[in-house]
Length: 312
Length: 278
Image (cartoon, rainbow over all chains, first blue to last red; front, side, top):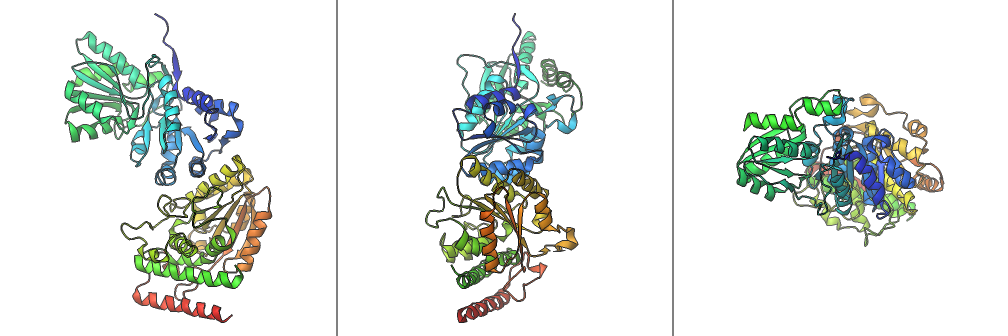
C-alpha cells in the first residue's frame, strides 16, 4: 500500500490564498509577525503589496481588517487560534461581528496538536468562543482538500468567517473526484447502523480509522465529517441520531462549547439522544510532539475506539 | 461656513444632544458637548460627504472611537440632513435605529459601529490603509477620548499608522480631562498626550477644541502634511455650553431630569441669542 499523503491545513491555507490571489484582486492578507508559521508567507511571496504585516498586535490587526472590509476589501487576518479567537475575541465580536463585516479569520495552530509550545499556545476554546458570535460562520476543515475548498468558500461568502487550521500534517482523505464543499453541509464518509461518529478537523481521519477498529468487533459505525460547526447541518445530524440511536462527537477542542456542545444543543431540542463527547477534557494541554499528544489525549483512532467501547 | 455660522450650528447640535439624552433618560452628555464643535467642523466644513447619498464611495470616513458620545454624532448627522432631527428623541428607545452606541448597519452616515473603547481607531487605520492600497483619495477621521487612550489598542493602532505613514488619517483626541472615575491625571494619567503621539511618528497639533479658527488651521495643516498621520489634541471643556455640566465628571454618563433639561436648554438658548446679536 502506498504511503498516505499528509499535509498540515495551515499549509493548505497559505497555498489556497496564493492560488486565489489572482482571481480575487480585493483579497488582502494580514498577519501579526507569524507569516512563516501561519503560512501566509506563501501569499506574501506572490502578492507582496497585498500582504500586511501588522506586527505583534492582534487586536489592532482585527480592527484594521474591519476597516478594510468596510471599504470593500476582503481581508483575511491570520494568527494562531489562541491570539485570534482568544486575545482578539472582543474585537472580532464588536468590530467585525456586530457590523457584520466581510472579514475572514484564518486561525492556525488550533488545538493541542500545536505540540511542543505547550498549553499557552494550544487553543482548545476557539470553536466555543466563535460560535457564540451572531452571524459568524465557523469552519474546521479535516484535510488539505477541504481546507483549500473552505478558503475559497469563505471568500465567496459575504460576512464574517472563522477558519480553523492545524499545525500537524494530517492525511489527505477528501481527494476524490466528486468531492464538493458547501458551507453548512456535513459529509457522510461511511454509512453504519449501530452508532454515529460526528467528527471535525484532524479527528475526522482518526474517527474513520476508529470505525475500522469497531468494525472488527462487529460494531457498524456511521461517520460524519462536520467541517462547518456553525451553521450546523442539523438535518443530517438529527437524521443520523434517529437512524443509529447513539451519537459520538470527536474534536480536538474542549468538550465544553465545541462540536460536541453544538451537536447536543441540536439533538436535545430535536431528537434527544445519548451523546458521548470525545475531545480535550476540561484541562490545559502540555508540551510534547503533536502526534504523542494526540495519542495521550485520546484523540487518535485507538483512543477514540477505546472510549467508544467503554461507554457504549 | 464662516466662524459665526459654525458656532450657531454647534449650538443647535448641543441642543440636539440635550434633547436626545433627556428623552433617552440615559446617555453621555458631557463628552458629547465637549466634542460638539469638532463634530460640527468635520461635518459642516471639512469632510467630503453627501447626506443624500450617505454611502457614496469617495466620501471621507469618520469613526467615532469614543462611541459613547453617539448623541453628539447623531445630533450632527441629523442637523446635516442625514435623518430627521425629530428622530433624536428616539435615542436609546426600544426599536429605534439610534442605538446607544453607533451602529453602522442601521444609521445613515455612520461609517463604523463603535463603542468598545480603543477599537475604533484601529478600524479607522484600516480605512486609511485601504485608501492607500487602492489609491483612493478619501480621508479618514477618528475621534478619541482622552480617557480612551488608556486602552493599549490605541497605541497598537498609532504605531501602525505612524510606521505606515498614513497621511490620509487624522486622529482627534477630545482632551476634556475627565473620565468616569475623575480627572484623567488622577485615574491613570495619559499625559503628555502630544509627546506620546509625536513618539509614534505623528504630526501633532494642539488646539482649543472650541475655537473654530484653530480647528480650521489644524485640519488644513493636517491635509498639507505628507508622510505622517496627524493627531489633533483638542483641549476641551467637558459639558461645554451647559453651565451646571461644565467640568463635572458626574455628567459623563447621566441624563438631565426635566428641570435640569429646562435649565440646560435655557443656557443654550442664551448662547444662541448672543450669537445672533453678533
